[in-house]
Image (cartoon, rainbow, N blue to C red; front, top):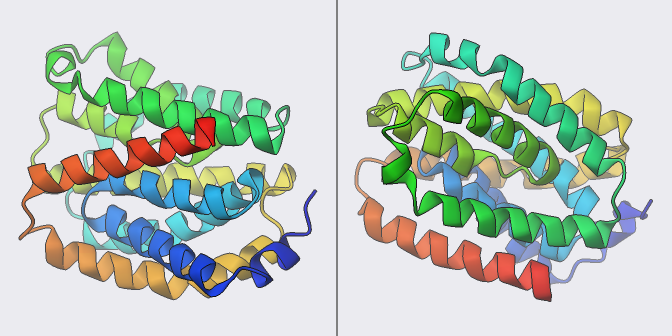
Length: 248
């Protein structure tokens, strides 16, 4: 296990700047465009050991989840969330088992591959939108696995909600409560695996204010942004970052 306290305390100024950017992206993603969190995951994984970055990202995402679940508390489809419990739990269990086996290098490259696969799946969202039966359970399991291993369950869940043809507020509310529940369930598992430790909590606490600022920016921007152009830029950035993790 790495001495993570020395890792994050020795980050240069530009490393802390990027870490703050990652925290802002986590917060922004929770109240605006969810897939943007992937960019924050990639940044932290590039700055710090992969398993430690996974624990820190989980804590920071939970801060954003608390805000988003309150802001969008009146726009949640509870029946849909109930249908996803079993496949998501299965995906979380598989992800926890995978985390217990692999090294930092393997996990970092796995994160990159997972991100690239999810980006490719996103290109087929329109065709999948007409097929919401058993495929939806597959996306639930995929969301559980990818969020456990890489805090990257957003794209799978987004595809599911697109398939269900949710309007913007219902999309945001259901997504917020889904990830609040999933991320909270991951905490004891992550503690047991040694991914969340006191020094990881200290690092996340230092970045938590930036997450709160990001949630505020997301609330302001969600009604004004040119969403298509914004998502194209985010997709390009995540793809380049994922390629770096796989081949860098």
